[in-house]
Amino acid sequence: MNKRAFAWGRVAASDPEALARIVDRQERAPAQEEMSFDELVAQRSSELTSYQDAAYARRYLDIVARARAAERRVKPDSEDFARAVAIGAYRLMAYKDEYEVARLYAEPAFMASLNAQFSKAEKISLWLAPPLFTATDPKTGRPIKRKFGPWILKAMGGLAKFRRLRGTFADPFGYTHERRSERALAAEFLVDVTLLSEGLSVANHARAVALAELAQEVRGFGPVKEAAMKKYAESRASLQAAPVVHRHSDQLPAVRVA
Image (cartoon, rainbow, N blue to C red; front, side, top):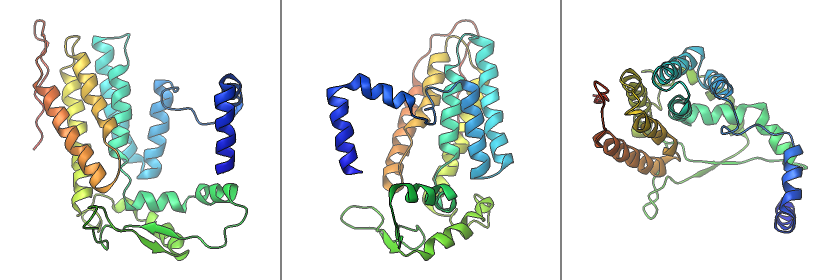
């Protein structure tokens, strides 16, 4: 794979147009920027159904529909707010916890990917940092990963079946600071979008879009994600405090979450 990467790099340097033609001919999943709004929402909804269940996906569809209806009311020629909500809500609702990691490893696509990349994989090991059993490296502040043998893949399949416990009182992982913060952030975002949709106007449309787009910057795991969430909170507060030029009763409602 390294040799192929160098070879393709040489092609990209010497004849980028030829490389573009080759890439265009390859079958690939379209990026979110290339999808229509309806395609994007349908794909994210399907993924959330696999992530949790149909009811969870319905919550996503409801908030996106609310944002789209509000935007059509005030700016029929735009879908910026609705699209930002569709992307942001999915990102925050589909946080990659223990159940999701297990589901992805248990999916047939994982082994198919390995078989496509390696001629023979006799023994597979995973390096993981289970939050309930992992110490923190004092030098880096990051969780210390441990090596798990092939048996862990079977365990992943079993754990994935319990994903409907996610967020309930019976969820053993749900009591960690990281998981509680992720759930709270997703809930806060849905409330924000609801209030923004109710008060959306031409005057505050751009700020509503900016607020919805902030969710796209929340990524990573552990301390990386914690830093991203802190930055999100600061940017959110700054945008909410920024003045808006109102016309008549175009007032952006204050967003407060207990």
